Length: 220
Length: 220
DNA sequence: TTAGTTATTTTGATGAGTCAAAATAAATGT
DNA sequence: ACATTTATTTTGACTCATCAAAATAACTAA
Ligand SMILES: [Mn+2]
Ligand SMILES: [Mn+2]
Ligand SMILES: [Mn+2]
Ligand SMILES: [Mn+2]
Image 1 (spheres, rainbow over the protein chains, first blue to last red):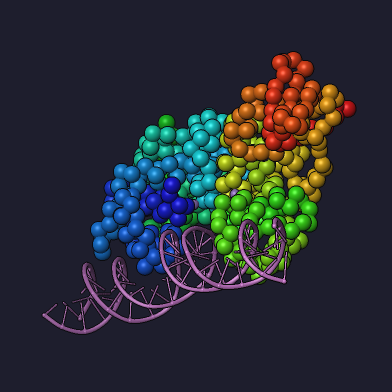
Image 2: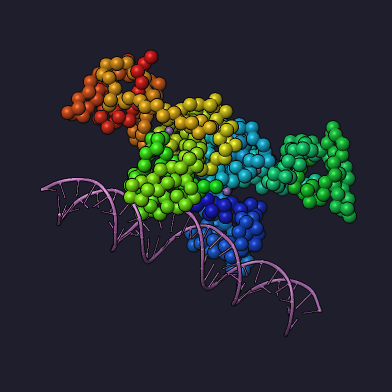
C-alpha cells in the first residue's frame, strides 16, 4: 500500500495538472506539499521507480496511468469525506478540508463505498469540487468565474476553488455558496475590482483574484 | 501531537494493564504491537523522556497520568468509530476493528464529539467493550465468563474480549452476541469443554479458552 | 555572446521507527 | 550454589521522509 506521503504527492500532482496530461513543475509541487524542492526531486525519483510517475528531469513530472488511478481514489475519499462531515456531522465547511486531509488516508475502499451510498452518490463536495467516480472518471468541465463571466448576465455559483478557511468563511458570510444566484454588475480591470450582486442584497466588491476563485455558469 | 505509533503504544499499554496500575511487560507489549522486544525497549525509553510512561528497567512500564489521558482518548476514538461503522454504515462487526485501528489516529476531537452525539452517546461498542467517557472515565467492572460462571443460571452476554475476525464470526454464527440470553449446562474441566445453551436452539460445545472470551452477567 | 537570475538536482545530515543478533540480567531447577 | 533458561537491553544497521546548502542546468536580458 502507498504511504500517506505518497498519496499526498500523487493527489497534488493530479490537482496541479488540472486533471489533464500537463507536466507539473517541481517547484509547484514543493509549494503545494509545503516541502523544499530538493525533497520533491528525491521523492519523485522514488515514485518514478515504483511506476507511479514519469519524471522528465529539469522539466517536470506527470502521473502514469497507475499513479493517476491511486490519485483519483485518494481524491474521491477526500471529497466524499468532506460531504460526510458537512452533510451528516454538520461541520463547518471551512474546517472540513483539514479533517479530510488526514481521513483520506485512513479509510478503506469498503468504507468509501458505504459512505458514498449513505450520502446518495453525490457528484460534488460541499465546495462544488467534482467527486471522481468509482471507475475513476473526473468531471473536467471548464467554468467561467466572476472575474471572466459576462457582465449583467444572471449566474449560478457552481464551485469555490480555494480551500483556505479564511476565504471559505468570507464566501459563506456573503452568501456566495454553490447553488446561489448572482450577477456581476461591474468589472474594472484598471482598479482590479469586480462588483457582484445577489438578487436580494447590496452590491459586493471583490478583487479580481478573489472573483477568479468563484466558478459560475449561466442560469439555464 | 503524538504520532500514530505513539498512540498505538499507549493504547495497548492501557489495554494490557486492564485499565489499572499494573506494570506491563516489554514482551507483552511487543507481542501486542507485533514488533520485536528491542524495539519496544527503545520506544519506551523515548516515551519515558516525553513523560508518557514510567519505565522500570527489567520490570515493565506503566502509563503516567498524561500517557493515560492520551491512551483513553485514542481508545474512545477506536470504539466510537466501531459503533459508527456498525450502526451507521452497517459494516460487519468482525471487520471494524481493523478499520478503526487506522481511523482512531485520523479523526479530530471535534469529529469525535460529533460522532458521539450522532450515535447517542453509546456506553459500549458493538463488541460490548466500554467506551471511555469524554472526561476519561473507563468502566472497569469485572464480569464472569462462560468459563467461570455458575452452571445452569440464566445469563446475559455483555462482551466479547477477542477482536479477531475468526472468533467474532464464530460468535455471530452461533448467536452469542452481546445482549443475548444463554446458560451453561455443563462444564468439564478434564476435557476442557463447556456446553452452552440458548433458550431456543441446540447445545453448543466450546473450549474453556473460547468460553473465557465471552463475558456474561446474571439476568436480573 | 555573455553575465546574471531562477529552477532543479545533488550531497550530506537528521529523526522516527524498525530489525537482527549479541550482551546482560533475572528467574528457575536441581 | 551453580548451571540453564528466559526476558530484556544494547548495538549496529536499515528505510522513509525530510532539510540546508552547494552545484548545476536552463532561461533571460543586455
Ligand atoms: Mn492528505
Ligand atoms: Mn472540497
Ligand atoms: Mn491504531
Ligand atoms: Mn471493539
